[in-house]
Length: 194
Image (cartoon, rainbow, N blue to C red; front, side):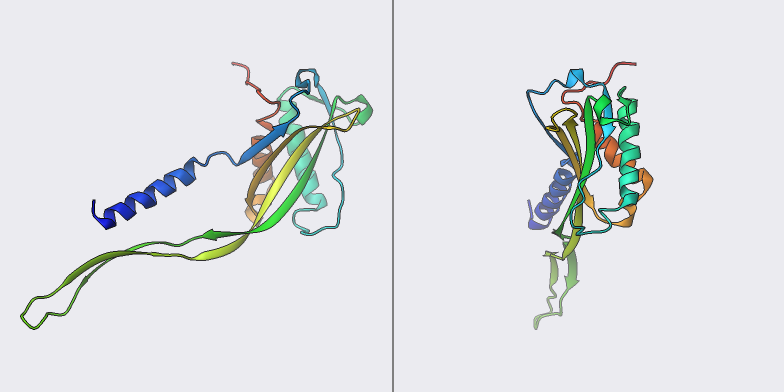
């Protein structure tokens, strides 16, 4: 296999692996928790710390996340109550952000014809090169926590990461991110057959 084809195959394999990296959602939970007993939930306001990124910590974002979480849990058959005293579990969210680097470079394949040599022969050149282009970006994480209503112990956590930009703060984008996270709650959930 010549080098140009080999590099092309490697680039395609890397793209395929990146596409298969799959779901951006991750979860963690208390293995001893009885998720089958949970039926009603109430909202627990997120802890307000020093705001590092006003985009990630705003009343607008809180309202969007609350609506999306409530909709997703209601669709799952859970009931919402306004009082934490009447709830089986509490729901809250957090955000985090960090600077990340990514390579936006690519391969270049070229074909060239050189000048003739003294004896009348020309040269043809075909080659490939990789040109790295490193850029920084802000990665945001949306974290949804499920807590025991009585003890306030963390029972389940789900999170999703994405680039911090205006497209990811629309009602639709937040609803989609929350739906991805809640799709993993409770652990081992199997949707009923319709």
